[in-house]
Amino acid sequence: MKEEVETQVLSSRLNELAAITYEEIRRSYEDFTFSPEYDLADPSVFEAFTSVVKWKILDESLILQFYGIAQELDKAYESFSKRHSYLDSLHSKVSSGDHSVNGMTAADIDRQMRLLEEENRACVNFNQNFERWNRSVYSPASPAKREERIRRFANETAYTILSRMLLVRIAESKGLLKQKISDGELLNRPPAGRHVWGGHAWGLERT
Image (cartoon, rainbow, N blue to C red; front, side, top):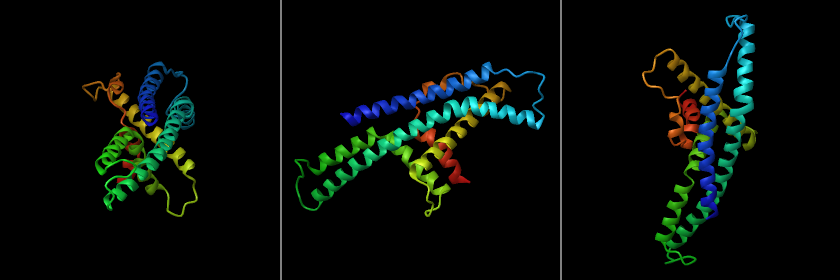
């Protein structure tokens, strides 16, 4: 029951992240003003402009949100992995000749494993994408700690999501898209950790 509650809370946080991401981009896009006295074609002015955008949207909001949820997902996966390994060891004992272990048959264990995997789909998807990214970025001999790697993965994912959302808004403003897709539609779609975290991980693997 405790694992089920934690999973529901985690799923809620992912939905919250989708909402925060959308609201933050919409607010920044609609409320942004810039003095006409400054020419964005000037490299120094444009650099200052991008620094402000990075500070307000990424450093103060999205990166902190992504990193916090990445930590939760990683912690949830650690608990999932321990429980899954335990059930797997029980299954091996039953398969080797015992009719039941701790009162559980092979069918009981299989059912528990399927339920466990279903309830922890978000953290499993996160871990798969994190490991794919990790193999692309770090060498096996790298001394970087896991916490450092997760922070970097979360930061880069935040940049990727922001870039894609801004590109969509630009395409909408220029009339390149017939159907608006940033008007709240994101909130009506399941966040599915794989889509949030997978975009950056899969993109690196293809390069």
